[in-house]
Length: 371
Image 1 (cartoon, helix red, strand yellow):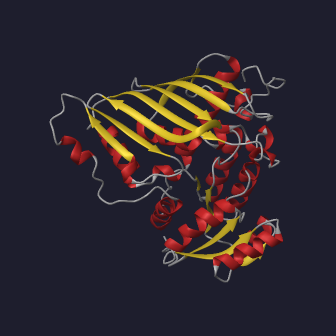
Image 2 (cartoon, rainbow, N blue to C red):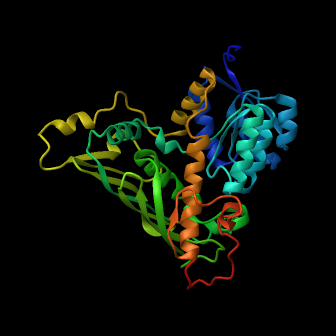
Image 3 (cartoon, rainbow, N blue to C red):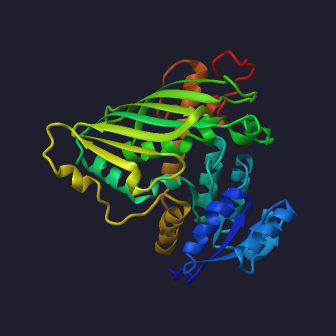
């Protein structure tokens, strides 16, 4: 096998705030391993501004296809609106490039299957940006929970209670099934319940409710779920854009300790708290709180993991089964909310309407009725 290049040639597709504020700092932090060679945006003014900000000799394109043909990058970072993700990801994979794409990776399980087929054909991989998995606090919590050091997981809560006003939804693609894939279940809470799945593993059953209570959108502005995990743990999940006091929170009660994360859009080690059960010897919790090194959750941390996988020639984290599992969770929550019945892991297969679209073909609801 040939050795990887000293610096991977990277292209970005979309040059808005998430790329400038997340991906560009990550590339700078890994400047010894990456070289930004191209940027794509349909808005020439925004593209020129980004190229000036990047401070490198970055080629500019208004077409992803033209960029891929001309530049042939090793890695493509995608930060465009969600409805474009599947097409752009598949094109990059077919050009032989690895992909790191903002959430959601695509809008349905059917679209994910297209991405998986492109991976199989090309040998390249597509990861989704779930940067909250990659802080040292999250890595430490997962190690402790999965190893049994905190005792068996019993009860969990996953809360994304954020606030978005009417102006937020004036952006044409937001709040529409065809362009965003859903409401806060797909666009906001997905970070937290992805982290919950990362901590607790396979889920078995979901019961859900959702509603459009305030905003004049097609999709929901709040959803809730009750989840049974394969090991027996029970969890609640809340995804809201109606909550003035904004917080992101995960709490897992294990037999020997409670582990809790409270933050908003990113966490450090200080945002994690461990509370031992009364029977746990004094001082034991001190070891729980000490990761090997302190790393905030960030695009920088996840990009480093992707680069490590590229160098090793192995599937990167946040791709394949992991990426599909989080998308399946979203589809199952929507199906449970629309149908009013429990949904089991693995039941949404080709031919199921919720495999083709998160709304399952359901339409015609009012602001008062449940999804």
